[in-house]
Every structure is written in C-alpha cells, then in structure tokens.
Length: 251
Image (tube, rainbow, N blue to C red; front, side, top):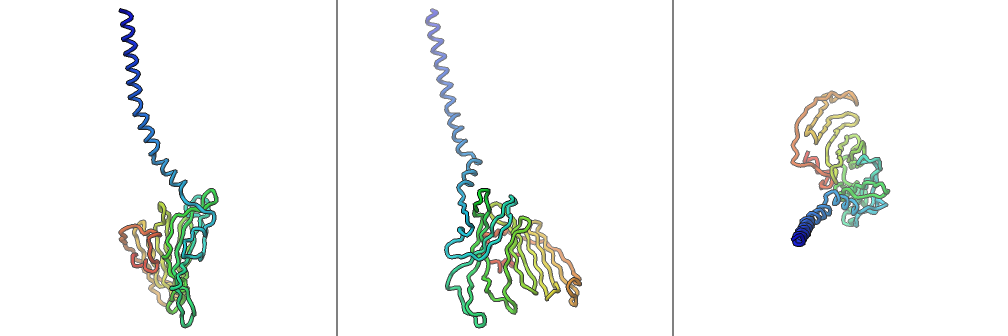
C-alpha cells in the first residue's frame, strides 16, 4: 500500500514539474522578442550606421564643386560643425554678358555637417540648388551677396545688398533638419532706413516699421510701427526650399 502511494506521489510531482517548464518557455521566448525589438536599441543601431567622413568636402555630390565653408556650433554640443556651400558645374549654365564677359550662372546649395566626438563629420541635411548664382543680375546695383553663418546655435542665411539694405533668414535645428524661425529685412536709401520687417515664425507675429521722416539722416528716422499675425500652413524646412529668391512670397 505504502509502495503504491509513493509511486503515485512521485508520478504527480514529475508531471507538475513538466507543466511548469512548458509554461515557462513561452515567457522566455516573449522576452527574447521584446529585447530584439526594443526601440532604444533600434535607435542606437541607426546612429551607428550613419555615414561619417573625416573631410567635409568628401560629402560634396557629383556634379558640384566646393564654393565656401563656415564653422560653428549648431547643436550646442561644444563642437564646431561645418556648413558647406557648393556650386553646380553644368556647362550649359555659363553665359556671355556684353559688359561682364563669361559668367557662371550655376546655382549654389548648402550641406550641413555635425562634428562627432571622433573628429568625424556626419550629414544632417542638404539642399543642393536653393541659392542662385553669385553672378546673377543685380539690376542697377550688383547682385546681393550671400553670407551663411552660425550665431548662438542658429543658422543664418543673410543677403547683403549694399546701400539698398539686407534681408536674412534664421533657422534652428529641428530633428534632422533646420526650421525657419525668423525673417528680418531692411530697405534702405544709402544710410537712411526706409522700412524694416521682422517676422517670428514661432509666435506668428510680424512687425513692420516705416520711416516717416524722408529727410532723415542715418539715426534720425522716425518709425511708424505696425504689428500683424501671419499664417503659415506648415513649418518651412531648409531642405525643402526650392529657391530663396522666391521665398518672400510665402512670408
């Protein structure tokens, strides 16, 4: 009797142990799946796979040449990032001007590279044809002078037009691109400021200042100020701008 009871008890314990092992297996398999699909791990893989190069000029695509480079900290990590200005090489874009001779009218573009802790550079965003040629017509004056630079972590695209004033665009890092957050312009007659415009795309506010003293010297202007609200359908990103010369129509 005792022998039969012991056999039955051992059989029951063995069956119970097998059931526990069977139930435990799916949980282990599920944890394996979660571990391999962890979003944080996926993000790390993307960062590792990003293409980096030692020389910023190695990012210049085929059909373009180096035009200018500027350095500044655009992501506030203490490292000097690189802004490349490039220029097309299409032979069909060369023209002959009666007074200026042969001119290269190929458009220019921008490449933004972040410096890494390994002293490499990685591509953040690019727009290869958003700027007109430096040899475009300037009307009665020379063509506006393009200046691209970093200041306080922002990227500026500045057009200087001598005695006629200037206009500039302010961009700030947004994900893997640069978003337009500001616009400023000044319409001048020599040293006298006629009109000033300032737009904040984050607050959607526009300020217009008009000089009411037409006889003013520089610093003697009397401005009438007007505020208004602008409407923008979606954020304007650096990589999506087709032509900076046409960008005023969206402001």
